[in-house]
Image 1 (spheres, rainbow, N blue to C red):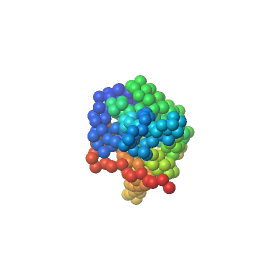
Image 2 (image 1 turned 90 degrees about the horizontal axis):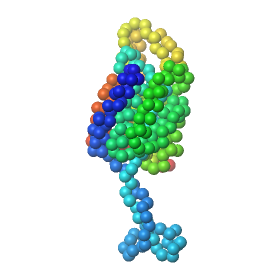
Image 3 (image 1 turned 180 degrees about the vertical axis):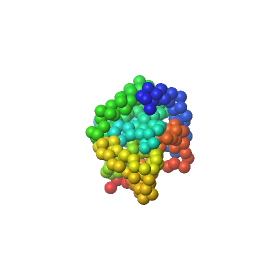
Image 4 (image 1 turned 90 degrees about the vertical axis):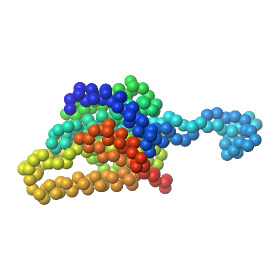
Length: 305
């Protein structure tokens, strides 16, 4: 898709995002967007009947009179998007029709960002490949969101000059998220997950935050029978494949099925929720269905060892 067409589609997303925001608040992810926990508000003099566990011992010792800590419910939560900008994300699927994984990911990221605006949450983002390329600290406002979108579109335009240079390192992005986030947050990873050894870092992140892995996947159907050329978008390596042979078709299908099963198992083990989003799917409809489903429950986070 041309960059201008993609931008025009994204500009229309604020209208759709109100529906997604409502589903996020109504579904089983509502706690993420309403916030949880308590924040310190003020200290006051101790009164008979107050819970002794709330006594502020430092203030009491300083002033010679017992004080208790007062708290208020924490309502604001940060949403952090980790967007994979590596070359493999910019490939079209084999039939070379429809959106690339990156275009679908960017559309989804923009929709989530506008939904965060509707619910009054701070939004931050990392754009990453083999390393973290660009950091958007958590902020509010339409100007901040559009700055993120325009920068992400710039990476789409740079694809041809960046290809065959880097892969993606999801573990690096997850580690960066751990360092950035100080309070409970929602972390959303948008990637094709052509990356290794990220499940441990995902597990660490899930202990303190809610994590959602969205895998962008294209069609796996072979376009025609005969000899076809397959190319690795990150290394440029090409191989000739006999797409007409039944043995090759079976091996091709089995590899993709095993990869999907392995990815889902890794997400479950780490404690992350997950969504496999096809490049041929309607991203707004898929996200609204996912967040609004009453059957979706985030996986229980692992206890600290």
